[in-house]
Image (tube, rainbow, N blue to C red; front, side):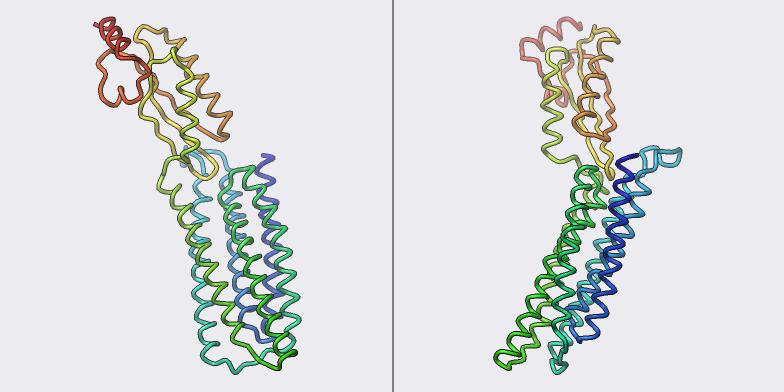
Length: 321
């Protein structure tokens, strides 16, 4: 429950921060006529929607399993991440269209550029601190929804700094050389859109990966396999290792092969040791272990995970006859 409260509180922080920045950027962007600042307001607006979705997702994912959802509600975070990616991609398309129109008709001049520089600096600073907090809590609670939100805000830091630099160049060139490079404004907006597309792609790939019940990361599966090997010689081998993830919840299933004449209590104790080790290493993991006797038949799937030598297998086959 403590982790759930931390996730909800940092999600609320993101909602409040983005709400303030959207209003601030939109007012300044319209006042000075900057398409890049307005595009940044749109970007923050999408981040606000994403933050609200993330808030709802983390609150829902924290609900315990029930009769209708026996495996819990963890995948709501993956679903929210996918919809966030769609919103981000839509925002990028809108920015590119608006920037292209401004490049075709560059006659509109900007006034009071200093306000645009100021709002971009404040935005970059605020998003940096909020994204750091989101990323920290996301790692501690393994929340893809908060991770996605933090990723958005890190992108905002980069794009806000890019827009600030372009506005600063426009102002310096206008006052120093009397040259009006207003095309820098829509050009920087297009750069913003490219960053947004990259964020959308990464988020889509990650969220769909878990929705498709892909295996756990290679390093996590490698640890599980390595730990199972430590149980030798109490077990003969293992097979049918399957893993998946739903939000913060992990699921691990496998078959352990034990000696045919091992007592049920002994096999149960081995299973409990393995389950506890996996749960301690990978929090929020549901482990299902199926115990099988080594009957000496040695099918191909069994040989692949067998810990016995050829001589030991032959001995086991004679004992089981």
